[in-house]
Length: 164
Image 1 (tube, rainbow, N blue to C red):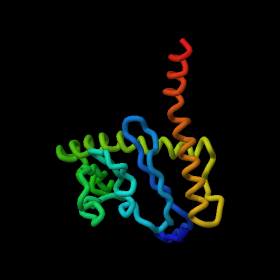
Image 2: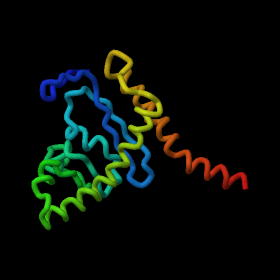
Image 3: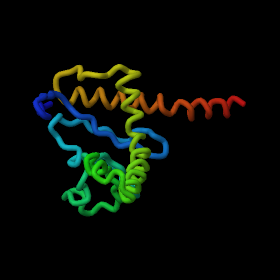
Image 4: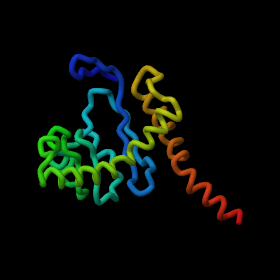
C-alpha cells in the first residue's frame, strides 16, 4: 500500500478497481492496487474480453491512446471532466453535451451499486490488514458476496418458479 497527496491532504491505503456487467450489475473483475496507482493503468485488466463498449469516469480519459489499449477492440465512452462540461453550459452544444454525459453516467452508475453494498451494507470503510495481498483477498470475498446480494431478486424469482 502507498500514500498519496491530493491538495494538502495525504491519503494512505489502496484502491479497488472493479469491472461490472452493465446488464446485470454484477462484478466480474476486482483488482486491488496501491493508492498511488492510476485508474487508466488498470483499464485493460478490468475487461473480460467480450465487451463491445466500456464506460469509465474522467480518470480514464485518454485510455484509447494508452499502450495497453493498442490492440483492443472495445469502444471506450469516458466521461468529460466536470469543468469542461461547466464551461459549455447555457449553450446549445452544452445542452447536448449534458444529455450525452447524463446517458454515460446512467450506465456508469451500475459500478457504484456493488460499492454501496460493500461500504454501506457490509460496513467495510477501512482496510483491516497490513499488506495489499490480504486486503485484496478480503475485497474479492466482499464483492463476491455483494454479487449475491445484488442478484437476490433473480435467485428468489428462480426459486419461486421451481417451487410452483
